[in-house]
Amino acid sequence: MKIYISADIEGITGVTSWSETEKNHSDHGDFAKQMTKEVKAACEGAFEAGASEIYIKDAHDSARNIDINELPEEVLIQRGWAGEPMCMVSGLDSSYDAALFIGYHSRAGSGDSPLAHTLDTDLDYIKINGTYASEFLINAYAAALHGVPVAFLSGDKGLTEEVNQVNSHISTVSVKEGIGKSTISIHPEKAVKEIKAKVKDVLKGDYSLCKIELPKGFEVEIAYKNHETAFRNSFYPGAKLISPKVIAYSTHDYYEVLRLFHFLT
Image (cartoon, rainbow, N blue to C red; front, top):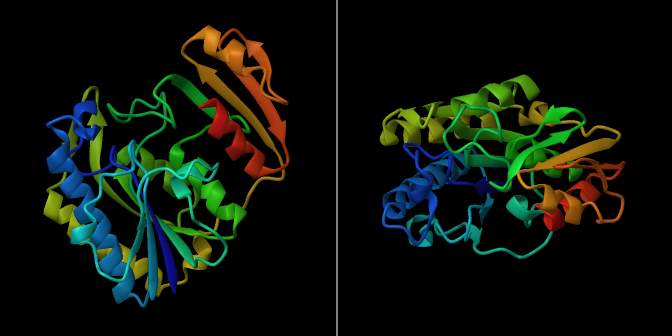
């Protein structure tokens, strides 16, 4: 069994403020350690379920948050950004049996987390086929492009509720809930234990049920906070300005959606 892990930090247990997510800020260290622990727990659960290979993408900001010295020796980890459209799931391809998302967060405009955003904090929202898109949905579709199911996700309550609506077979752990600019978190060690246990359980079951089917076509909207950014980006091939701050784009190829996000977010 070959497993892929994509890890963000805004959905890690306890993380509440942007300063706690920034590598050069003094607040970052403790939460990078917790991010490492939660990724390690997912690895341990996967290995106990029979995984033979695990590839990890550090997918937050600098992509240099996870302490590789604390991970099992058998894993591979991609640090930094390769600079290609798969972005947060860089390296994922059809050779993987399942993907796990650790530390993911609610979408832009959701109000479910003080750190809610989608791809870029300068965006008001992204819509795909009329649905407000989270990074979970964007990356789950990227996995589906290669036929890989997303078997597990950990993050805030608002996002886990979204995941359960998209596919109820995907196993989730809600580590916290956002209220205004605050969060209410479970104990960090409880999060670690639950992540390990649920990853193990879902990978021992029929995780093929977690597959998400790609739509046949994609109508994308990107709403920017600044009208000048929308105007400039409307000159991307195939994009059009539909209001002062919103561009639209249509395609039948999801990789082209990822390419759009790569250059315009």
